[in-house]
Amino acid sequence: MTLKNTLVELSQTLLPHHALSQFVSKFTHSENVMWKNFLTRQIIQRYGVNMAEAAISDLNVFKSFNAFFTRELKAGTRPLTTEKGAIASPADGVVSQAGKITHGDIFQAKGKSFTVTDLLGGDTARSEKFDNGEFTTIYLSPKDYHRLHMPISGTLREMIHIPGRLFSVNGATTEAVNGLFAKNERVVAIFDTEMGQMALVLVGAIFVSSIETVWHGVVTPPSIKTVRDWRYETEAPTLKIGDEMGRFNMGSTIIVLFEKDKMNWNSDLVASKSVQVGEKIGSQNS
Image 1 (cartoon, rainbow, N blue to C red):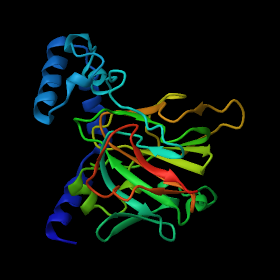
Image 2: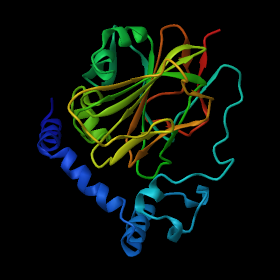
Image 3: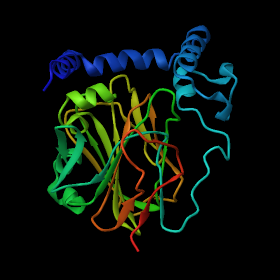
C-alpha cells in the first residue's frame, strides 16, 4: 500500500462515521428556507447539476435540501431500453468496475477485493448463488439523479440490512480501503427474475443519511449492530424493468449481481464509463 492510500484509510477510519452522518442529516432535512436554498444552490453550482431535467426546477418548492437531492426527473428524460432480454442501468453514475465474480471474489480496485459472502451479510447459502457470476458497481456523485430503478423485472424474495461503517465511496477511498463495500452499512434486495436471482446492493457512505426502498420505506436509520432480514414468501412485491426500487438520501453506490451464465455485460461497460438510468448495459444469455 502506498503512503497516500495509508493516509486516506487512516483518516477515514478515525472519523466518527455515524455521528457525522446523523449531524449532516439534520441539516439536509431542515426546512429553513434560507439554509436549504443556499445549500442547494451551492451544490448545483459546484457539481453542475442539470436542473433542466428535474420535474421541479423552482428551488422554493423543495421542502428541504434532501427533497432536492432525491428529486424526480421529467418524464422522458431517461428513455428505457426496449430491446428484448436487455438489462437496464439501475442508476445514473459512473461504473467503478464490472466483470466476473471469480471464485466468490469481487474486484474493487488494483490489489483490492471483497467476497460475495461478506457483501451479502455472511450467509453462504445466500451468496453461493452468485459464485462465478457477474457484477457491476456504479458510483453516484452529488450531481447525479439519486433514485434507483430495476435493471430487469423481478419478484422480491429477501431484503437484508447489514450494519457497518460509513467510509466514503469516492475513487480515492475505494483505492485505499480493502473490502470497502463489504465494510460499509448496506441494504441488499434479492429478486427472482427470468435470468435467475439478482441482488441489488445499496451501499451506504459517509453523510448518507438514509437508504429507503419503495416497498419498505426508510430502512436505515436506525443503524443497529445486528443483521436484519425480511423474507417475502407471500404477497411479494413484483417490480418491472425501469420501476423505481429505492433511493439514497445523499449519494453512494449500487452493486448489481447476477448468477453464472445467465447474462453478459456490454463490452463497453468498463471502469469510468458514465451510465444513465434505463440505458442498456447488458443482456440475457441466449
